[in-house]
Amino acid sequence: MPNLTPVFSQVTPTIPAGKDIKAALDFYEQKLGFTATYKADDFSMVILKRGAVEIILANSDDPHTASETSLRIQLSGVDALYRSRALARESYAASAAVDEAPYGFSRRLSVSAGCI
Image 1 (cartoon, rainbow, N blue to C red):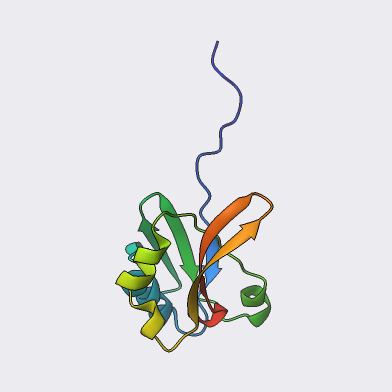
Image 2 (image 1 turned 45 degrees about the vertical axis):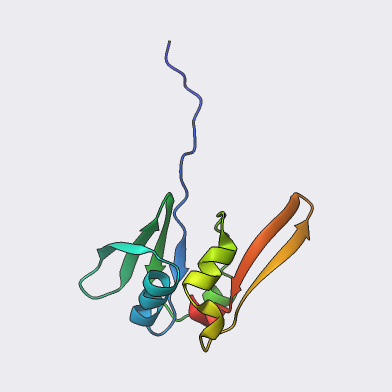
């Protein structure tokens, strides 16, 4: 008898890219090391992937949607990512920190909302 229990295997969030989806695409590719696997001809949507993480950038500059959007990507080596991508020298706000949360300690890379 087949197993009828549903198994969730992946979530692919859609993130508003702001007024300039090409700048957002550059940020994810050049600074975070993602690769575009799909680009709509009119750049209304871009699908990006790095490892097992996949996200969709949508060409939307709705301020309400952007202010309510949050994304958490778990990874190892956040310090190396921070150093290798030279995020500290960029003009946008980026920082790495250790947080204590109810579920334990986590290493965090924060980037201001205007960058995503």
